Amino acid sequence: MTRLVPRLDAEESEAWLSLVTLLELLPSALDSQLQRDSGITHFEFAVLSNLRFSPEQTQRMSTLAVATNATLPRLSHVVTRLENRGLVERLPSADDRRATNARLTDAGRRELVRATPGHIDFVRRTVIDSLDREQLGQLAAIASAITRKLDPEGKFAALPREE
Image (cartoon, rainbow, N blue to C red; front, side, top):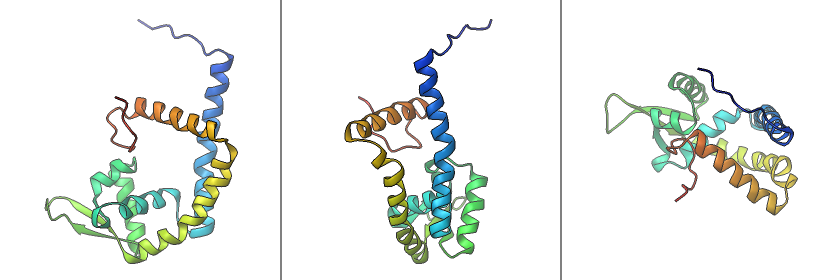
Protein backbone atom coordinates (compact mmCIF):
# COMPACT_ATOMS: atom_id res chain seq x y z
CA MET A 1 0.00 0.00 0.00
CA THR A 2 1.34 3.41 -0.96
CA ARG A 3 1.64 5.86 1.88
CA LEU A 4 0.34 9.34 1.22
CA VAL A 5 3.00 11.93 1.86
CA PRO A 6 1.91 15.52 2.29
CA ARG A 7 3.24 17.97 -0.28
CA LEU A 8 5.70 20.61 0.77
CA ASP A 9 4.12 23.95 1.52
CA ALA A 10 5.63 27.14 0.06
CA GLU A 11 8.00 27.74 3.02
CA GLU A 12 9.14 24.09 3.11
CA SER A 13 9.66 24.08 -0.66
CA GLU A 14 11.71 27.29 -0.54
CA ALA A 15 13.89 25.90 2.26
CA TRP A 16 14.38 22.59 0.45
CA LEU A 17 15.23 24.16 -2.91
CA SER A 18 17.64 26.59 -1.23
CA LEU A 19 19.41 23.66 0.44
CA VAL A 20 19.57 21.65 -2.80
CA THR A 21 21.02 24.65 -4.63
CA LEU A 22 23.64 25.13 -1.92
CA LEU A 23 24.52 21.42 -2.01
CA GLU A 24 24.99 21.62 -5.78
CA LEU A 25 27.08 24.82 -5.82
CA LEU A 26 29.30 24.55 -2.74
CA PRO A 27 31.20 21.30 -3.51
CA SER A 28 32.30 22.48 -6.97
CA ALA A 29 33.23 25.91 -5.58
CA LEU A 30 35.38 24.25 -2.88
CA ASP A 31 37.02 22.02 -5.49
CA SER A 32 37.68 24.95 -7.83
CA GLN A 33 39.33 27.04 -5.12
CA LEU A 34 41.56 24.23 -3.88
CA GLN A 35 42.53 23.05 -7.37
CA ARG A 36 43.26 26.60 -8.54
CA ASP A 37 45.28 27.57 -5.45
CA SER A 38 46.84 24.27 -4.36
CA GLY A 39 46.36 21.65 -7.07
CA ILE A 40 44.30 19.34 -4.85
CA THR A 41 40.62 18.48 -4.76
CA HIS A 42 38.39 19.09 -1.76
CA PHE A 43 38.22 15.32 -1.21
CA GLU A 44 42.03 15.08 -1.23
CA PHE A 45 42.11 17.98 1.26
CA ALA A 46 39.68 16.00 3.47
CA VAL A 47 41.87 12.88 3.28
CA LEU A 48 45.03 14.84 4.12
CA SER A 49 43.25 16.66 6.97
CA ASN A 50 41.93 13.43 8.47
CA LEU A 51 45.41 11.95 8.42
CA ARG A 52 46.96 15.14 9.84
CA PHE A 53 44.79 14.97 12.95
CA SER A 54 45.05 11.21 13.47
CA PRO A 55 47.47 9.63 15.94
CA GLU A 56 50.88 9.39 14.26
CA GLN A 57 49.21 10.97 11.21
CA THR A 58 48.13 7.46 10.27
CA GLN A 59 44.76 5.80 9.79
CA ARG A 60 43.53 2.41 8.68
CA MET A 61 42.13 2.70 5.15
CA SER A 62 38.71 1.38 6.21
CA THR A 63 38.51 3.95 9.02
CA LEU A 64 39.61 6.72 6.68
CA ALA A 65 36.92 5.66 4.19
CA VAL A 66 34.23 6.05 6.86
CA ALA A 67 35.67 9.38 8.05
CA THR A 68 35.60 10.79 4.51
CA ASN A 69 32.31 9.14 3.52
CA ALA A 70 34.01 7.28 0.69
CA THR A 71 33.90 3.77 -0.63
CA LEU A 72 37.13 1.83 -0.22
CA PRO A 73 37.68 1.71 -4.01
CA ARG A 74 37.27 5.51 -4.31
CA LEU A 75 39.56 6.12 -1.33
CA SER A 76 42.13 3.66 -2.67
CA HIS A 77 42.17 5.45 -6.03
CA VAL A 78 42.64 8.85 -4.35
CA VAL A 79 45.31 7.55 -1.97
CA THR A 80 47.15 6.13 -4.98
CA ARG A 81 47.10 9.60 -6.58
CA LEU A 82 48.33 11.15 -3.33
CA GLU A 83 51.02 8.44 -3.02
CA ASN A 84 52.23 9.17 -6.55
CA ARG A 85 52.70 12.81 -5.52
CA GLY A 86 54.56 11.80 -2.34
CA LEU A 87 51.86 13.19 -0.03
CA VAL A 88 50.71 9.90 1.52
CA GLU A 89 52.23 6.46 1.95
CA ARG A 90 50.60 3.09 2.54
CA LEU A 91 51.93 0.60 5.01
CA PRO A 92 50.73 -2.64 6.55
CA SER A 93 48.82 -2.30 9.79
CA ALA A 94 50.83 -3.37 12.83
CA ASP A 95 47.60 -4.55 14.48
CA ASP A 96 46.12 -6.54 11.60
CA ARG A 97 48.20 -7.98 8.77
CA ARG A 98 45.13 -7.97 6.50
CA ALA A 99 44.63 -4.21 6.87
CA THR A 100 46.47 -1.34 5.24
CA ASN A 101 47.17 2.04 6.80
CA ALA A 102 47.62 5.39 5.10
CA ARG A 103 50.11 7.80 6.60
CA LEU A 104 50.66 11.46 5.85
CA THR A 105 54.20 12.16 4.69
CA ASP A 106 56.18 15.27 5.57
CA ALA A 107 55.51 16.53 2.05
CA GLY A 108 51.79 15.86 2.54
CA ARG A 109 51.78 17.81 5.77
CA ARG A 110 53.57 20.72 4.09
CA GLU A 111 51.07 20.65 1.21
CA LEU A 112 48.14 20.67 3.63
CA VAL A 113 49.65 23.52 5.66
CA ARG A 114 50.20 25.46 2.42
CA ALA A 115 46.62 24.86 1.19
CA THR A 116 44.83 25.61 4.46
CA PRO A 117 45.01 29.44 4.63
CA GLY A 118 43.53 29.90 1.14
CA HIS A 119 40.86 27.35 1.88
CA ILE A 120 39.93 29.04 5.15
CA ASP A 121 39.86 32.41 3.40
CA PHE A 122 37.48 31.02 0.77
CA VAL A 123 35.24 29.40 3.41
CA ARG A 124 35.19 32.66 5.36
CA ARG A 125 34.37 34.84 2.33
CA THR A 126 31.81 32.43 0.91
CA VAL A 127 30.02 31.09 3.98
CA ILE A 128 31.06 32.58 7.31
CA ASP A 129 31.04 36.26 6.30
CA SER A 130 27.67 35.80 4.56
CA LEU A 131 26.04 35.18 7.95
CA ASP A 132 25.73 37.09 11.21
CA ARG A 133 26.55 35.37 14.53
CA GLU A 134 22.94 34.34 15.13
CA GLN A 135 22.71 32.81 11.66
CA LEU A 136 26.01 30.96 12.22
CA GLY A 137 24.56 29.37 15.34
CA GLN A 138 21.40 28.49 13.43
CA LEU A 139 23.42 27.00 10.57
CA ALA A 140 25.40 24.85 13.01
CA ALA A 141 22.21 23.66 14.73
CA ILE A 142 20.44 22.95 11.44
CA ALA A 143 23.37 21.12 9.89
CA SER A 144 23.87 19.08 13.08
CA ALA A 145 20.18 18.12 13.25
CA ILE A 146 20.14 16.93 9.62
CA THR A 147 23.48 15.15 10.01
CA ARG A 148 22.18 13.23 13.03
CA LYS A 149 19.26 11.98 10.89
CA LEU A 150 21.60 10.90 8.11
CA ASP A 151 24.30 9.51 10.43
CA PRO A 152 22.55 8.45 13.66
CA GLU A 153 25.55 6.40 14.83
CA GLY A 154 27.92 9.33 14.32
CA LYS A 155 30.31 7.34 12.10
CA PHE A 156 30.98 10.15 9.64
CA ALA A 157 30.76 13.39 11.54
CA ALA A 158 32.34 14.24 14.84
CA LEU A 159 29.28 16.10 16.13
CA PRO A 160 28.19 16.48 19.71
CA ARG A 161 25.53 13.89 20.46
CA GLU A 162 22.23 15.06 21.85
CA GLU A 163 21.61 13.72 25.32
